[in-house]
Image (cartoon, rainbow, N blue to C red; front, side, top):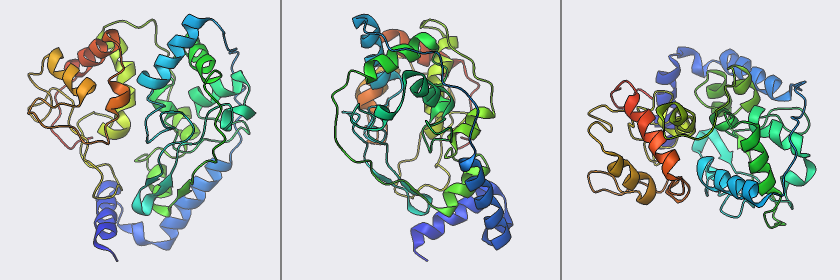
Length: 304
């Protein structure tokens, strides 16, 4: 066994706390449960959302796509939304964000079906999307969803085939133990959806924005290695007000971090952090996110 893969598997055993990881029965039960859940057809109807051609609404949607939701990040759907960079994640598999231009996936969807996909992680056929982090931005209210979809309908069409999506057994096991969000609709269905109000520079609004940080920094935002990830993947930092995190930071320190990728210690962030998108947040959003982070209980690094 390659050292990197062996290290990953050992880490997964520690995360799950399950000595039976190597057991055929354990693997079969978890993989079967995952496959069955992904085959489930949800009866959630499309939302009553219709695109707008109002330039202000379309502009708001562009901001949501490029900044707030980071859809245009290279590891998501790419700058032109024609498909992201394939993420080869060792034993977890390979994930590639699809082409969501009018020449790609979105062509088959009505406005209401797109809105359902974004909020609930449910595809056109009623089954779960894979790895799409709907649970991180399904707080967007109907006005925001309308804006986002209105913009998507205006982007240049690209005739580009979708890249590979291949999940390894390990990814399926981690998903079933809520350590990795592959079965999106199941994860969304497990929690109530709370919609945000109007944007404001408050910790309350920042709590919604911070959901987009949890996939990397963990539910407590205290960082640490991502379960099952290859050893060469950058380790997310602690962004709680702990001494190992952002204790003592000013808003100016935080602004430099998300806008330029400059850490307070003078080091640059790793490219894994989507600065090209987060740096486009407006002042209201950045102040709200900072206010929320500073309101958190300090957590030592690595608690995720």
